[in-house]
Image (cartoon, rainbow, N blue to C red; front, side, top):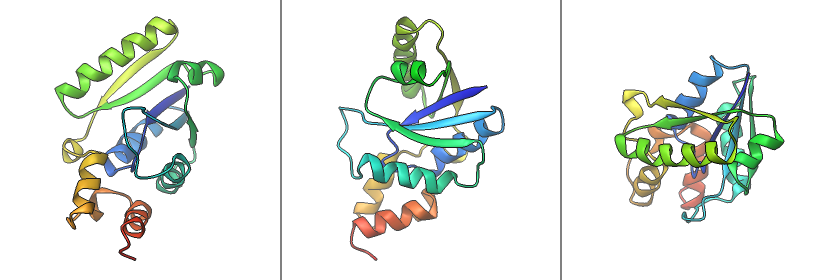
Length: 159
């Protein structure tokens, strides 16, 4: 069975990677798709974000990385995917994700969304937090894969 795990991944964190690792053990194929959210201002281009995700998941044989700027439901239909996996950190995530899941289901009755609760060690972690720490010289390296930490350091002129 093939599933979709989506996000903007600006940048991918160890919390995202934890979800990907966990679902890669449960499903035959995981498609990690980098999307653009019109409400967000990105540090990295979609190509850079895909590159970072690919580097972070290269140890997982059943995970592929793709991108799109369209609707999730359209991507799923074009790629014969009927299950979307979303990670949850807090109640506020659930409320947001439930509304997205509901509209996706309205647009495509075949789509199911599975919510996976973040591991306790990553329940606080977000890409925004990583960027804030990095911008202010805080200790962010342990929160992201090594390839991502290098990319952030390079972006901030610390290499």
